[in-house]
Picture 1 (cartoon, rainbow, N blue to C red):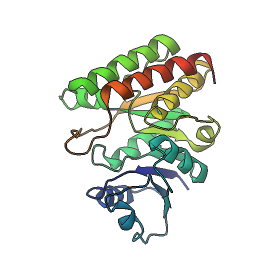
Picture 2: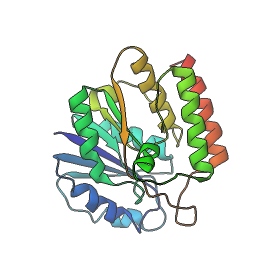
Picture 3: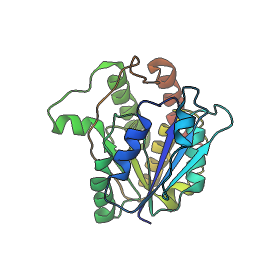
Length: 232
């Protein structure tokens, strides 16, 4: 199997089936592991109605946060590559194809989809506190790890599954994105190939359901980058 897609879900009843349809429409052999983090808005009931041979639904017994859901998905995946897919409409699953092509052409252990590079390519700007916070955190990673990446907070991190399973991820919330970036950067420092290419992105607001808290999650991300630079 070429690709495994891990979809952590929490209270996304309005978008989860649309995202699932978009993922299924990508012309690549794949499995989809949906991990619901104890949704309370009817999402769980929707997920239990899914009937597709390549979809596995896991219902967490409590709210263990996004990172734990992703780690649960990593335990289950079997594809050659794995990518994480948020259950909202901010990302375009058709970008799996260029990410996969870059991985296979370059031999990279991971390819990150940069929203910043995508915005520049499409003549747009990523503004607001989230955008500037991501630029700052990406600069911190470049300083600490010596790896040139523009968007370490991106959801789209395509990683060889064998590599991903060997990273021993520990974080439980949104900070897992930064732990994953830090550990991939460490692999790059050791000589592994790590790439970054543009992807499309349509940000949503807190009113539309965005769950990140820029100050709280930003501080946790900064600590994660510092912590994993000097420890495992």
